[in-house]
Image (cartoon, rainbow, N blue to C red):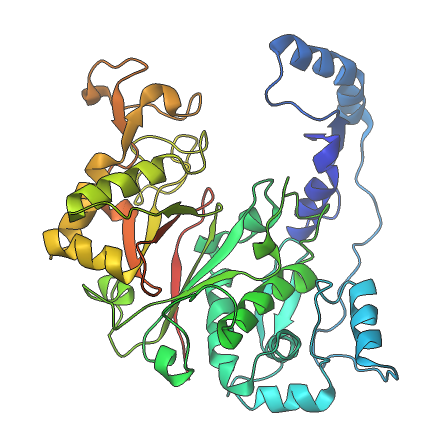
Length: 427
């Protein structure tokens, strides 16, 4: 038996079905349970008690078989006569798009798109949560066409899918959470030059046709194939424009002051790499006054501390994964080249810069969420005003140099259980 609040009952049912469970016993109680008094919680439990007992004694699973998905390949085709606006209206009404304009995925366009990969069109790359829709290579091509991608972009789209599909990415969480979750991608390597990607001014913004298409594509995958649309199964309280076009950063090789990010995790300089994780909304550092790398890292640390407030824990450890007290175990610091250059002036060794940033990323105990900061026994006595580190190890901090001129840095931290997954782009 599962006890669930009424606002999340549909999501609970979807989770049950996605795990191949035909039926489960659910008892619904009024939302919310969090941030209310113990007396209010007890009153809700008392009101639901008879239903809980009745379900425990009398509930039996349904004898009906779960509906089966149609074969994912070959995709069904249909004839349609109308204007471009009519096509977009049709796709929006049938939930085949995000209500943004799409390029109509005609049979000829999809066939042309498939020429960009050697993968078999029938190959299922991912069973996309939460609805568990089957994403074939053919469907990648179809959604790629809709998003404005070209055949030569297929290897990049497939690598992005493989990163999202990795179990370590725990895609179900970011795509169904109440938080304003953001799919964040980082692109590195020779593919930047090959596809003429913009790694300078406005790298993650508009006027970037390839990365904009990738950002649109991944949300078509999430919503159209995975079924993650509000209010079910996407439960985001506020939502974000990144639900339409994901964030995509491109590594600035010319502004690089250390090794590229992929080289620090075992890839070759010759490898083109896509990195993905589900993030909370990003933060910014706009320090125009720092005269040293140390001072700049100190203000960046202050920015990190304010992110996802009350969801972060102290002594978070990138090696230990998620637990109730290890909510956001790493941070990606996206340095503009000018900020990167200033830091490298004091810290030619990237690891030394990470060490220093970890040291200054500490805040008073009282600013951590209740129950989320449990210092180790050897930490010593502490009170509300004791400074406690957010991260246990420097491994929790990653630097990525991206963007153009300006004193700007962004910080991105993951949702619980979301790990940064990197995949090589296979031509």
